[in-house]
Structure formats: structure tokens, C-alpha cells
Image 1 (cartoon, one colour):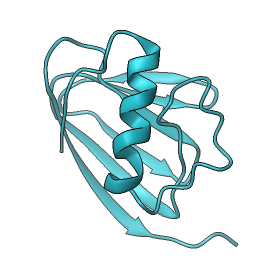
Image 2: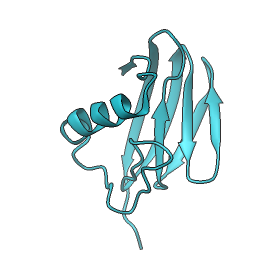
Image 3: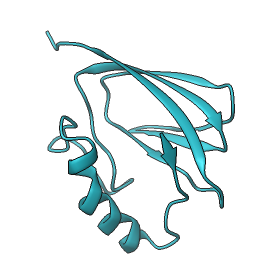
Image 4: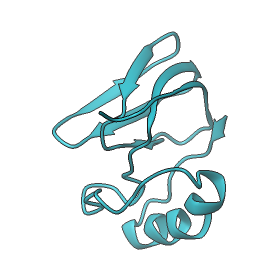
Length: 103
């Protein structure tokens, strides 16, 4: 997935996520996510492997943020999270999602 730089103004970023997020990721649950930290906060019923191929991406969790660089791999285990490209160039990331169920 190619992810462009996020807009510099929060209102523009929020509008962008609202316009495209539900179409691109219909299974993402947003009802429990506090979007005040980032407008794309969501959770899924999957175990996700995120492999950054090119550029930089911020993995945003409820309590922390991690800058990912090419070659980094993050395992996301169904927690509330979001992604942000805060650089000035395109980022390319590979997501592998494995179906899961909550107990």
C-alpha cells in the first residue's frame, strides 16, 4: 500500500480519513477508538504484520508512537491504532492480515 504524506493541518487530515477510511477499510472498528490522538484510530479482529518497504511511517497506539523505517516489521494484535506518514514523500508498506477472533 502506498501512503501519501498526511496533510499538515489536522482538520484536513480528519476530513480525509472520514471520506476514505470506511470505503478502504470497512471492517475497521472505530466506535471504541478515541480519535483525538489521530483521526484514523481504529481496531480490527486480525493479527497484522506491517512491513515498511520505503519511506517512513508512524505506528500510533493508544499509549505510544513508533517511527518505522524501511525493513522494520510491526506486529499489531488487535489493539486500537493508526498510521501516519509525517514525512514529505510517499511511504510504501506491506500489510499481512490474519483473521482472528476475540474471546
